Image 1: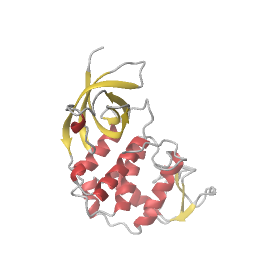
Image 2: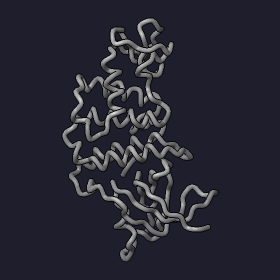
Image 3: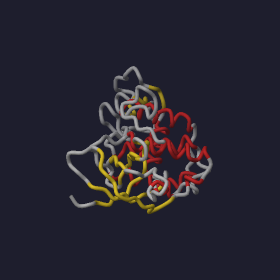
Image 4: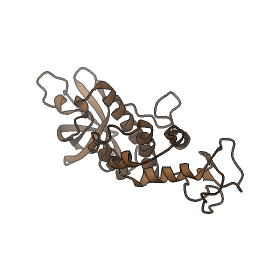
Length: 250
């Protein structure tokens, strides 16, 4: 079978036997693919130094329909966002977003928008340095939920479907699928809130990351809490033994 080249960002890499590496990557096609680089850790190998985190890499490999790990023959750096050279806290923060992106993709899925959201975030990494991390994280999750088909109901009641009004008392319920109007029954996980939270979440979805510092959002901890609860219910915790779709970046 012919070789194929495709761009992707590393999700995880692990040593295999004495001198090989297995690399899992989120590809520009929006799927997760694993590669084995045989002999990549040998002293004379030119491959290992190119397998860098937080960068767009071009993987050259042999695709086989009956295999779950493809043999890769080469890798090249296409776009380096400079995060690998940043301090540990910056790398740890960036790794969290990679974990979110990969957690939303099951093997066999193809959601290119998730890859685009991740690369967009990394391209704007320096510009968003001062943005509240809770706002950035909530916005990232919400954008991914949108393209995963799991966006919470924000403008219409998750139960009856009627348009929500700013004057109404609202409740937020992950199990119901978002915000609920005052007329509908409330599941046990419902939290009393107001329309401002729904409007703020809609803003985060529709605003580019680089403009997040221009947003005026009150109580970002509540917005983050709502989004994280919704994410954990529908996708699963990014870390922890009970995660439903766990992908650990290292």
